[in-house]
Image (cartoon, rainbow over all chains, first blue to last red):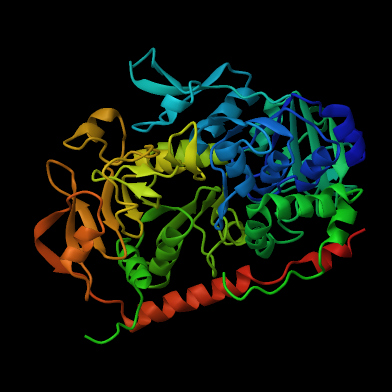
Length: 287
Length: 268
């Protein structure tokens, strides 16, 4: 474990063409890390995430990805991820291969990855067309009962990136709140980078909270508000107004590109990114 | 007849809320299902257990979440578990009474599409995808589907089947290995459809005040079967409307509240 700056950690560990997972189910989404990957111009990434969310919409729109593994690709409660749609529907800014799962299937694939099993089984994908478009979804008969069950191959990202509330100085990581499949994605990876709200002397971790011990953590990066516009329980709330506003920003290629150039490419780091945003989002009259 | 004091959307939400019973363990999707499930909690079913796929069990939000994982869902929950756990131990484990689903398209057997419009490889419209729905549809003891009715969404043939209803009907679902019983009702802004005994084809069984049967049939992309006796659903009560409108007003105010950026910028 080492403590690095975000720029150093991405430069050192994230390479073109890798399979990487930035996990966090609505909560603790590592936005700052996604932005830094965009700034450093990574290409041909295979991005894995249950819910691509705005962070992958931005990375896909900026041309970082050539493959996406996912299970639900919308702007939660708002509608489409327009950049993801544009990539799938019109191959802009380039073609994007997709490996589509259900949540249950992708969660199971991370579990198998964390346990270093070759594949996962689930009672899933019953009576739907997903297996016909994703050849990774197959089935076997239970060797004990003969029951037919679905299988998905393990997912083992080369790099998983998480955002968490705290690390201590040894690099032990504390996550709490909605924890998604973060622990599984972390342990499935070869390299684990964790951005944190703060580094503290003592982790005040409730006994059954998620703690990732220091020897599975490759690098810790202090990035206050690193999940913004998603949230970090106990630190700040989800900026739902931003998620609503993103619908207009991302709908159009030009306004998307201008926004990314101004706020991500045009800023040095996450603190500058936050500083570049208006102090208060404009009031919206209707949801 | 005078102008009704409520909208078709409000009628749909109220009718869907009434489907849930007190103590029911309900797996909830975002949107109208979430509004209906919480309305049930604020009215006749205070002990309904709401579970969102973000792993929040027994959540009691005061405003509707915008996303499936808003902080209030966790903060007001009885327990918060991981995604692998919610899908394997709770949903696949058979511990959910009712699933509440929405979709972009539905067919006459209650199968749902939330994946693409058009061809999968070159879609006309790429929709968000299935998320938790395929396994909710498979494993919840029964499901309720809520969506607005039009010939565009109630189609003779789905462009893609994301989640199973009764598949090809006539018992094909039961033979498939799906553990739950499938859709018990489809609640729309025009009426309520339920599967017919035997064929399992969706049939209009309940209508709303001021909506003619021919109107429901016209808003369906296949020749809709109509039950011999179509019951009239009671209009929303004053109390139901007040609670639903309050909930939406609180939600709108919360979602549009300007960001917390000012506080964030004070961080080192």
